[in-house]
Length: 172
Image 1 (tube, rainbow, N blue to C red):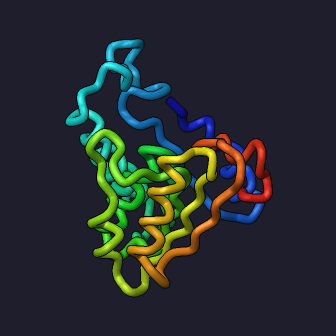
Image 2: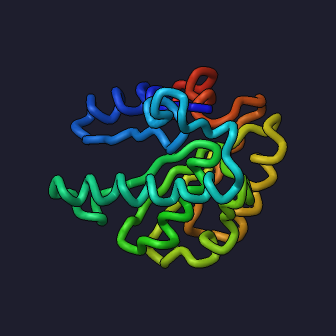
């Protein structure tokens, strides 16, 4: 149930290093709930899968402001990690993705095929916590599929998604 505000620590660090960033609320999360009328907790899997369109819209937004796809790196947490890998699979010009607590299948947003289809110049940084069992297992699988295109970091604790920044601020 994270919102764009959960990315604030990363955005501050990026800004301090002269890097522009954009954080979005996926449909049904944070400010995109339309005053309660749109709630991810009530979504069927098909509605979650439509969040791909949110990632596409963010890319269109950046393109309209002069950012080239080659300049864009994508970071996602939990189902957002799956959407990140999905976007890399669909947009070969995006070269880098960071997956925080990905899964092989979160609500129908699957990742294995996208990991198989990464281009030679695309790279992943995959991070999970051992105590977050499903995500840790999924991360190992995705790293194995991606091979030399992925770097894997597994923490010993049980944090999930952007909560890892609280216990591991060096990750930022």
